[in-house]
Structures are given as C-alpha cells and as structure tokens.
Length: 582
Image 1: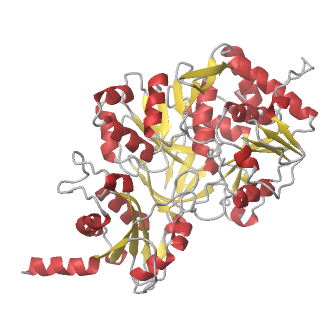
Image 2: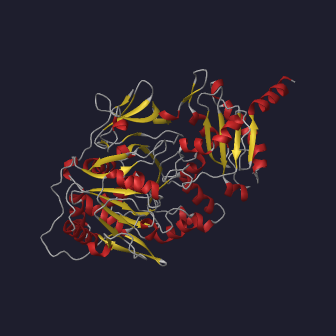
Image 3: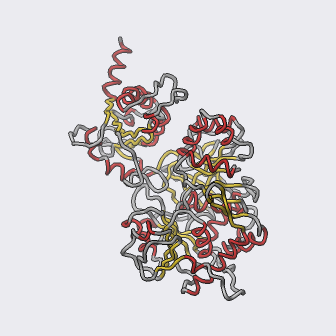
C-alpha cells in the first residue's frame, strides 16, 4: 500500500543552499531578533543583521585558519549563540558541520570525533575539553573561558569573531543544492550511532514543504530546549524558526526542570512549542493545582504545540484540545531530515497515528509492513558504514526506515521498530510494543515498560516506576477508575497485578501475553546508557544492564542489588479463572 504524495509547490531551487537563506533573511528581517538567551532575569538577543555579520566574520576567519569547502567541523557543546553562528558559518562556507551530544563521556566523544574524520573542533569549555585525549584535529575553538590549555592548538572562540579585513568576502551562495552540509549521528537506540549525511536540499526542502501545511511566520516566538545534535531540535525546530524568520529563545534550563520552563514561558509567551510527551506531562502537572500557572501555560497566543519521539497520552491531548490549542504530531527519522508525516489538526487524534506525508514525500509499505519513504528529504547515506548502507534503499530508490506501520484512512499508524520484533522458542513472532503501550496507558505510575522473550517459551516484562509520582501520589487525577494511587513499590506491585491482566486481555494472540513481570526500583538514564541523548529507551542496553533480572523471571536465582517486586500473571489469572468458575 502507498500514500500518493503531492508536489512541493515552490521550487526547492528558489533557495538552493543555507548561505542563500541567510543572505535573504538578513536583508528581509535585518533589525528583527533572530536568537535570544536569558541574561539574569530577562532575555537578550541578537538581530539578523548582527548575526549575519558574525557569520561572515566566522567564515572569513575559518578560511584564514585553512578551513575549506568540504572540510568538517565537530561541535561538542550544548545549544548556544556561539554554536548556532558557527554551525551556520560552516554550512554557508561549503563545509560540513558535525554536532554531537554535549555531555558524552570520553569513549563516545572520541569515537564520534575520530569516526567523522573532522579536522576541526569546537567545544563549549572545560567539561568537554577534559573528556578528550586521543583525537587528531588541526584546530580547536573554545566558546567559554577555560582554566587551562588542554591542547597546543586550542584557541579562544573570539579569534573567529574578529572583523574581516576583506569587505568583499561573501558566503558560498553558489554551493550545489545536493552537497552535504550536515553530518548528524543517530540516537543509537539499537546499537552504535550511525552518521547520517544530509544535504542543503534535504534541510531546505523540508521547510518549503512544511510552509504549505502550517502558518509559522516572523511574528512567532519559539521557546527552545531541544538539543541541536539531534534532528528533532537541530533540523526540524531550529530551521522552522530560522527559515520563517521567527524568534528563537533558548530555554535556560535546557528542558530539565518544568518550573524553570514555566518561568521562561512567562517571559517569552511562546506562540509554538516543540517538545516530547514527558515534558508536556511535567508542565501539565504544574498547572493542575495553580490557576495562575494554568492561565500562563495555556495562553491565548499559543497557536499549536508539536509533539514527537512518542505518542502524547490522550488525556494530555484532550486538555489542549479542550482549550482549542491544536496538537500536532509528526514522524520521521534523522535519515529523513527528519519529518515525513504530520497529523491533521482538524481530525481527532488517535494514539499511534502520525498523519499523512508532507508535500513532496511518498510513503509506502513493504510486504512485511516496513515503512518506506521517498522524497527530497531523504539522506545521501551513512558515512563510512557499508554494513548499514547495505539494503537501506530498495532497487527503485525508496528508503527502508526500519519502522513497521499500517496505512489507515486517518493516516499512517506506527506499530513498532522492525528490530524489536522477536521470535519465541516455538517460532511465533511477538510485537512487544503492543503490550508496552497498553501497560503504560493503564498505569501512569510506570515510566517505562519493556517486553522481552527472544528464544524463550513466553514473554516477560520489566517495568520501571515513576519514582517522583510514587513519592508524591496525585489523588485527584488517575488514569483509570479504581486506581488507589500507590505510595511504594509493594503497593504499586499489588495494584498493578490487575492492570497487567487487563493489558494482557488487550492482546489478541495468547502466545504474546506476558506470564510474569518485574518492577525494578531503578531508573533508566543517559549515564547508564539505558536512555539515549534524545531520551529514548535503548533496548539492547536495557537487556544487557538487567540481564540478571530477566533471567530470574525465567527461573534463575541471580543476586541483584535493586529492590524488586515480581508479579506472576499466570498464577493470578488462574485464580481469576477459578473465581469465575465458582
């Protein structure tokens, strides 16, 4: 099956590269604030004219240091004005920018820097420099003042901002639209990150397509925390603001503290907001018992919210819709720059449905249900990864996404990742995400549910509690009637037995039902590698980290450090059957 795509009305070649976009925007919105960050208790920003001048100086001075078209520069830093200007200067000079997560430890940071073959590096400061030893780069530029000189070729970033001596110097507006300008590493949910090669065409075609389906313009205000090393923040949100001349305000807490987000929300009053369900839930929790916070968050100028990475719970979606604030959801991958499909705000949202293809993008299903994509947003391929490139495109040029889906009248429905499907010892295939979604829907005291069982007789689940909610139960709001708001792991375990039974009943195939589950008093985290930098579960790492726990669910007696609560569903369901018979 296939969704027929419809063409992009405006020719992609009308803005052939990032340099051309910058030249046009600086001329059109010269005195308008393009970017701002928090200084004390207020926001202070930079105009298009000022930023464009800085970009010209950076591009000019990079050239003096020997940087040339085709060269790569890694940026190892959290979001900042310096990172934004440098990234745009590199891309507008014919170079390739390679942003990586700001807080990678030494092993991963060095792995990616060396794998990228970049000979130029920019870092935020001491935190990043102290984590690097075995790298081979020509020059290192440091945004912040640092305590010491870690490398002999280390320079203060101010050297790139020096006024250019050649006033005729210009950005590379002749850059070919097909040239690569951005290398972005995937989040690595199923293993080592892959390096995605993206072109000017990939990035700009996305914005031209999106301009046909929404109304972002130069009067819009973004409050942004999504990291720029990741495609959701660094391509989708960032270029949605830049392309349309909107003002991008950096959220000072980087999305980590809902109280700080709300404080900044008051200062900026964003008209659009891009985030993930976990953050929306935290913000909504703050507004439930505070009318002032409620009025502030759901203010009248908020045009829409955008959610991605996971489905927004229906209860949250309904809260926005009851206030006439549209909820948009999208789907895509880093390899597709990233957006392929968007929901239609005029249709009632359905869990798992991510909408229809954006203009210029085609979507179809392979025989096994894998979603395939074709369009100007699809990457060139993975850098230095023959194994990953093998079979990633079909013979007729469609990109194989690795996601399993279903084409419906209401839009594309996501089912699971292809590599998450596993076989039991009897050969039956299990789609674990079906049950995981049901469990998480049944109980919001569970942060993550993971169903496994490859090669075993039956599936089991490991569950990770929402520890903050256990410490402070919400007695006013619960997902289902009858939830008594547990306050400890034991209370949660006793309460969850019935919910897991109900979730099992929602699965049609008997072999796909879990027979036991374990609640583990622990949290998945970036530091342990069980969450990716984009806060997605890394399944392989979770299985590896909790191998002993999983083996115990299948009858082993491994010593484990965490407090756990084991729920034997087979025993519970047998009791229920006997009661029904009686």
